[in-house]
Image 1 (cartoon, one colour):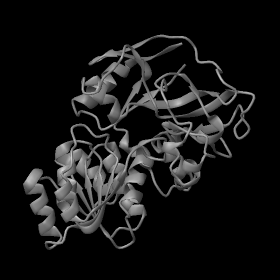
Image 2 (tube, rainbow, N blue to C red; image 1 turned 90 degrees about the horizontal axis):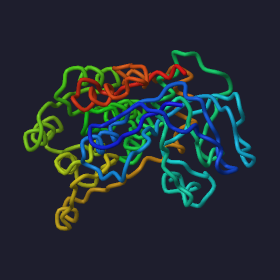
Image 3 (tube, rainbow, N blue to C red; image 1 turned 180 degrees about the vertical axis):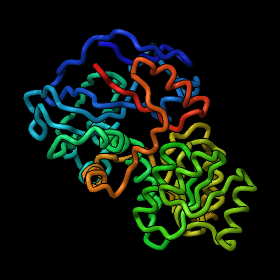
Image 4 (cartoon, rainbow, N blue to C red; image 1 turned 45 degrees about the vertical axis):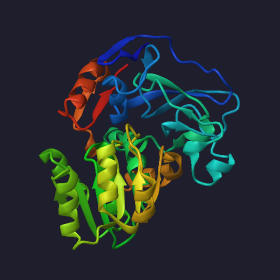
Length: 340
């Protein structure tokens, strides 16, 4: 088959690779219904993350099971499934504690920007629907496999509560999903930080009540003005840069909580600052599997439409253009059609 391979910064190719196959009894092979490009894929694309040779890309996926290993019991061929970018057994002590992204057998999904993919630890990772969803539901289920689950975790980690005040730092796909999650969890005020008109509008569509375009000290000052000098009790940090974390800490009130899900690049903390700010912090790789059953039900009921975050749809053979469009901020998130 053909699949997406990154050979180096800026060098993405759709080229022939070996077909995926069952390697362990706990594996499953799925036929992708659609796949997409993640904002985190841009780190190696921009040369900001180390890469040791060509890499098979893609960790967001939904599709139909075509084959399972001998030890797989919870899914079967012919079922439509959604999985997480973190592969987990869903039975270890960390999984049972709700942190499947720290599973004692954890693996990270790769190779999903392709027509077919192997999913390890299929029993613990994949969640099946009772019926085959309509084509119009595919973008929403695809979003659930990572960006929706990650935005939801940011809101959960930040202890978003009914009637609360929330600030979302970052207007990429994860930040926008964080806005949606905060709205679903009942926040009364959701302040989205964004300088881009299309993203501002989507943030409002997902439930943002205020938009702050300023950055840095000016952004912090504007939010403090909006909150009458108090700050927000819940802050979602969805970027992973030092400046975005500084902004998150600058707008979080004492006793408030920062949920951080942006992969850190150049982020550092000062012990005195952490001590005197008295802010809680929880984050890391999102335990999407914890939230998947609930999120999939919300999608099925039409309560949420996270697939709206895909503002560019391309045939998977044009994946290089999808990367370029996201890198140049011409697209929030690219969905790739799998026609094979």
